[in-house]
Image (tube, rainbow, N blue to C red; front, side, top):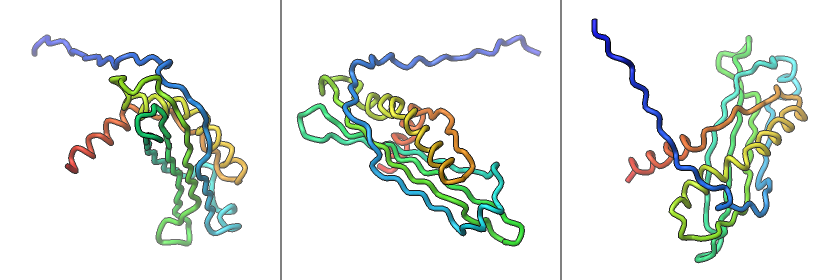
Amino acid sequence: MSNKQHEEKTIFLPIIPVKDLVTNIEYIRELNVKIFNTPKVFLKVSPKSDITVTVNVNAQQIEKDYPQFEIIVILNCTSQKQLEDDDEPTSIFEIDLQYGAVVTLPTLKAANIEELLMIHAPELLFPEIRNIILNISRTSNLPSILLQPIDFAELWKEKKSTMKNKN
């Protein structure tokens, strides 16, 4: 046996000053709640339904040469359940939220524009997104959806990798 020590590598992301990003306004761009097979679904669904959450982030400049951008966080929560009398899973509900913000960068020359728009802006918006989803699920008499923190840096890396592989 060898006495090799396990070596861990720590990766440090650059610290990006939040002052480089100003949130002007936040808003719900679109919100859809679909509850299928009501009222029967409320009698058969347990509060511990399996919920699938998908997230995407889009950013676009509002006007050329002006440092203002629209950020849209697109979130989809769906639930399907295998009911006793059905062969296939039944759709229980679907919540689609597009939450937007207009953000301003002090300068368009910042080297970290993409990180600011695709990682840090969504991180600033996430607490409100989380509250909206929780309140909508409760108000709709669905199982309460308390979103876990989302790693927007990892989401951004995956999106970049997918785009790179397509080209």
